Image (cartoon, rainbow, N blue to C red; front, side, top):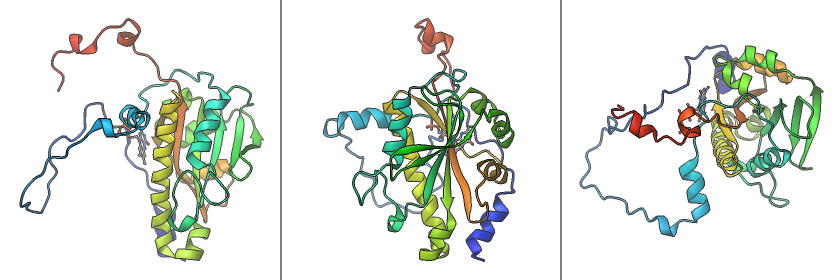
Length: 256
Ligand SMILES: Cc1cc2nc3c(=O)[nH]c(=O)nc-3n(C[C@H](O)[C@H](O)[C@H](O)COP(=O)(O)O)c2cc1C
């Protein structure tokens, strides 16, 4: 068995601590860097040189904090997110890069509240640009059980589970294929964040789930396929400050 597969099978059982980072907790200080610089050259960021819509998306991208409970999302919004994260531009190229052009990650979608779609489990067929209905039903209860932070699942309107096929990667690249697939996942995730921002749909990447349980829910082979990451989508809950147009900074004077 490939060493990386053995590692993956073992790590699927490991419980991780909660991923959620409290707001304003970014490390602003310079990390403990081991090198000595000869000099430091400030960047000259020129926003005018940037395509303004891309700039807006990058600057507005953020993980959802709290979603309204299962708001109805329009089908075009969901379609756009899937197409611009996974779709084919032409016969040879997808919207995301992939190491060796393998594209061994696939999207499964749990629908809870999306216009025109019955609740259930779907598969995005990127070759036909279609959603394939696999199982009908509201599986929220079972899915919640698979997550550490259940509230995002309770609230979200739909959930994308990204499933990687290890077999395809190993056949071509051996253990290096494992690394490549995780990197591919990162590229897809950023596309997901940017396209959902562009469609005014809020999302949050979620890795805090029991991988074996998730694989069971999807009825995938488990050993050579596994859920690499998930994203929960919905409409961001407006807080009372925003609703009444109050500037939070006037209320919280000393925020550390
Ligand atoms: C690979 C990955 C896994 C994540 N898993 C979780 C998770 O399980 N739970 C969670 O609340 N947030 C999760 N997040 C969201 C991060 O906590 C979030 O991106 C981070 O706090 C920075 O916030 P921002 O995305 O708004 O800039 C994950 C993000 C990434 C990229």
